Amino acid sequence: MRTEKVEFAGHAGGRIAARLDLPDAEVRAIALFAHCFTCSKDLLAVRRIATALARHGIGVLRFDFTGLGASEGEFPSTNFSSNIEDLKLAGDRLRQTHGGPRLLIGHSLGGAAVLAAAGEIADVKAVVTIGAPADVAHVLHNFGSDIAEIEHAGSARVCLNGRTFTIERQFVEDARAANLSTRIAAMRKPLLILHAPLDETVGIDNAAQIFSAAKHPKSFVSLDGADHLLTRAEDAEYAASVIAGWASRYISPAQVAAQPQQTGAVLVTETREGKFQQRVDAHGHRLIADEPHSYGGTDTGPTPYDFLAIGLGACTSMTLRLYAEKKGLSLDQISVEVDHQKVHATDCAECVDRPLGDGKIDRFERRIRVKGGISDDVAQDLLRIADRCPVHRTLEASSIIVTQILPE
Image (cartoon, rainbow, N blue to C red):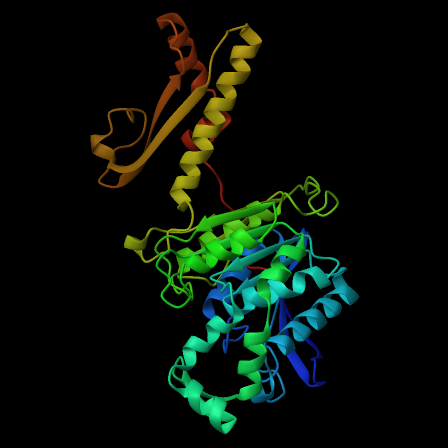
């Protein structure tokens, strides 16, 4: 992923700070992300979702609303309506450089903002909410007893998530006047609702109300076990994978055209998310490599040795299918299980042709199944052909690895 700093004028004319996260490979679509109330574009969950979406070929523009984060302006003078204006201006900024946002994604109050603005941004093909309230006035619950002072004195200092903000009466009045259900019904765009059942900030009943107000096509996915801010990496990763898969139905064919066939090396790059996580670019295909939690990883993808086992299993199955077709064998579905382990060379009965020693060697155990069963004669043939699998031969043969350090 590569990140670009972006700036544009907000609803009050002040500078809005934004970041555009783009995939290293071809961009399938651009999403516009609206963060939660008093949050910023740099919220951990927002960054994780943007990073994960980039691995699926989806770029993300995330920005700070007026008066928040690195954006200019006075937060007390903003409200829900001004957030919608900032959101539309962000869409205009994208339109100048990337043809406009194809997706709108909003978290919490940002989710309410994208629901309200979606009908006014022509380029948007689909909308996603994460932990969004069904009623904008829901945010007023965060003010507790301070709401009385705001209404009486015109403003009050309110502590939200450990920080203090000045909230004015106009914010309260604007929130109460927002008619979100009407805008949801008039949106007429595909909607994906993501919500945690145990969300203590915005209850799950809000998801039900949004779903009821929306027209089809609409979908709901439960973020089971997640909290409101998606503080766990795996929850943000899961949300991003669901968004990418769901949105692929609504991105125009031109945007999701298959990547051109590439030649050359596989590229493996650190994602900087977690200690070991790697992004794998293999001829237009994006994968993740990682290590399990027990080894200090985040367990978001296969381990390097898993990839070796995957290569052996896939190559074996493909080789057997080609053999079956050539010989006219009617084989049902083939599956291959592969286990990998380190064993002492002196304990490896299969290694009679190798010098023995006290070191350990790699042992792959391969188990082949054919649905519906096969005769003993066919089984013997398949065992013989499996050993001809190119990856099998590579693993058994000696290899030469040449390594060099390249300029930056």
